[in-house]
Length: 140
Ligand code: ATP
Ligand code: MG
Image 1: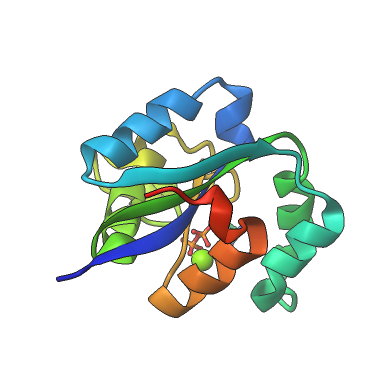
Image 2 (image 1 turned 180 degrees about the horizontal axis):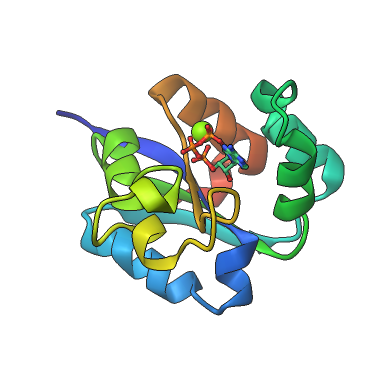
């Protein structure tokens, strides 16, 4: 396995409850390193662009409203097989299905307000990192 990068978002339900540190600790304890991080208020157009693959899904408008409902923390994470590792640490999309000890089992409020985002492939990780970060903002 190689050291790779993935993209993470600490979602508004988690920032609202002051869980930025708690979520980040779970990522770090799971073997990932935060090599870029910033707290932003996503604009509607940004959220629509980021979740463009989901625009035909019934939950798209609600998801955009949720992701713009408060600040998020966008991060680049680095580690062994980072995409898969991050998704293991996050757990299943629906917290009801997520394994014990995962971010979503521990913190998520619902399938929508599920506290964290993680890229689903190396290819999408690169696209998502480039969507939010310039190269000089990432320091490994
Ligand atoms: P993410 O992309 O956020 O890491 P994921 O890959 O586990 O999560 P996706 O299928 O890509 O899940 O869905 C993106 C996001 O859309 C989910 O994290 C969740 O916030 C929301 N979502 C997914 N399915 C539903 C649903 N059935 N109802 C409401 N919101 C949903
Ligand atoms: Mg996804």
